[in-house]
Length: 452
Image (cartoon, rainbow, N blue to C red):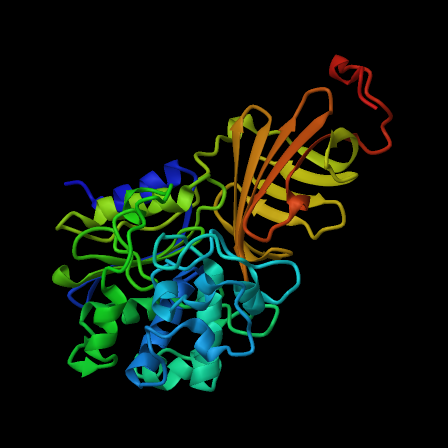
C-alpha cells in the first residue's frame, strides 16, 4: 500500500526542498510528527506570512469586543496620517483583510516608516476592486491592533488565545523598523502550537469541549471575501481568499508563509497539518510544496511517513578525493580571496574567507551554528571529484547554501556557492577557481591561459 505522506516527502526532496517539520492530525489523533534536527515541532520557527492570519485573528477579536469596526476606513484609527487620495481615504479595514486594498504592491520603502508608507503611497485603483497581495496592509493592521488593543500584538492575544492553548513565551513577533509587530511576516512560533490553533479553527472556536475563540470570529476568518484568480501562483492560491486566510479548495483553509510554512485545516474531516520547510532554493518551491501537500492530504488513509532527510541524493565514496590546505583565488565572479579545505570520503570542513569553518560528514547530517544561524549540513561526493554540500539554517530568517566543490587532477579547485533566502545577501552566491596557496600558477592546466 502506498503512503501518501511518504510520497509527499519524497516528492519534496526530489524537487530540492528541505522539510524541517511535519505534523498531521486527524480527529485529534496525531498520525504523523517528524522533524529534522536542529529544527523541531516544539522549537520556534520563522513562519513568514502565516503572520498575516494571526494578525487577522487579533483584528477580528477586537471587532468582537466592539473596539473596531470592519467597515470603518483605516484612517479613522490613524487620524495623524493624511491619505493621498479619496480612494485611500475610503479604504476600509475589511478591504485590507481581504487583500483588496488600493495599492498594486507592498508600500515599504527605505525610509523605515513602514506604517506611514501605506498612507503616503498613491493608490493605483479603487479599494474593493482588485485582489493584490500586500504585506504592508498586514503591517498596518498589526499597528492598528497595537493601537486599539493597547499592547503588542502577541500580548493582546496572550490571554485570549495563547494561554488557553498552552502556548508559552517562545512565540514572538519580529518588529518593523518603526517599532510595530511585523504582522505581515514576523511571526516566530513552534509548529506544534499552530497545530493546536488549527484544531480550534477547525472546531469553529472550540477544541475538545473547550471554547477558545468566539464562533463568529472563526466564521469571519474563513468567510470567502475576495477572488485571487489573477494570481500567478498555483491553483490552491487562486481558489479563494478569506480574511488573511487562503481558501485552497472547498471546505478547506490555509495559512501560508514564504519558504514553505503551511498551516492547513479541513473542518469536515477534522484534519490539520503544519509544515515548516526551506523551499527557498527552488523558484516557486513553496507554492509547489503546497500542491504536493494537498495532493497527499486528499487521501483518506494517512500514516507516518518516517524520518525526514535532506534533498541531496546518495553519497558514493568511490568518487571522493582527499585534499587539505589553503587555496587562493585565480579568477571568479564575487569569489572570496581564499578558501581552506580538508576533505575526504568521510567528510571534512570548508572555510570560506574569514568565516567559521563549515564542518560536515558524508555519513549523516551535521548540526551547525554559524553566520546564518542554527542549521544542518548534508554532504555527498556525487561524481568523481565533485563534493556537494547543502546547508539549511534558521534563526530570525530562513536561508540555505548549496555549494559544489570540484577537485581536478591538476590541483585546481573550482567552487560554486548559491545562497537562497530573503535576507541572505549576495556574499553567499559566487563562483571561483583556486590553486594551492604559494604554489605559483600551475602550468599543467590550459584552461588558465587567459586567467589573471
